[in-house]
Length: 377
Picture 1 (cartoon, rainbow, N blue to C red):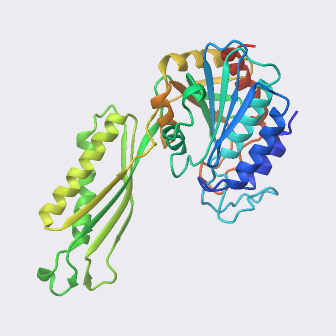
Picture 2 (picture 1 turned 90 degrees about the vertical axis):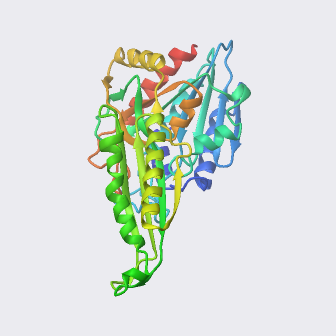
């Protein structure tokens, strides 16, 4: 049996940014080749830093997919752990080291006997920055015999206890969209504003007007967030700003609401630019970060299964406004995502995040039971 804690700690020390997970890829490949060396019914292929493992069933009627993400974040770790990141300015602050370890442990357990149905294990890069799930899908990696009929995945959740699994039969994660806006006017001396056209003032009007999207365009019973966390304009106190650049995010619980919010941002920005007589450049980048919408029937079956498992506390949970590129894959292939409790006081993306490693044995045991239930023996 593999030492899951040792694997997790080894992975924790080598976090890498999306599509640069070269050391992680090499480590995973070594473990996967070790696991499958004497298993002729297993095939492995790669795409950039991603890895796909296919377990061929004895009499397959369908293909069950399990997805894990493998990238880290540009965060400097502050846990003080003996096995802290060896890569400066990089950290597994979103739990992907736990995700990968669980996938390896589940695969090991599933290979004890050849299943009836096919299994796909997807080790996906670039969840945090480039929507690697979308990239792999669009590259045809999950086509033909490598396409799952059902797709499953999880994400650790710090505020849930070990032993708790949480999901729902609708939207679990929000869809996100990155927003970049640049207003361009005419700079000038502060003493002669009539000879200039102030981009900073235009940007300020935009910031106040854009708040009306949530208050006046979004259905009150639906969820949407519009946040601009960055505004850069001007160089000093007595020079009128020629340009103003804003950087923000949209988060919504349905794709329809996301598209509506994008359209309203564009209309307001263009309207402000027109009223001030300046130009505007608008970039809306959603890519593969669609809402994670669970398939209702598959989610109900998963929840029923875990609710009946000894040692599991199942929670029917409300959606979260965090984003996840698994939403893109679920827009193409029906499936379910769920939260796994790791009870730590620090939030996701926090430099002190340190999940409880007891979640490894629990997760492997329970998820293996679920996949065996689907795949048959």
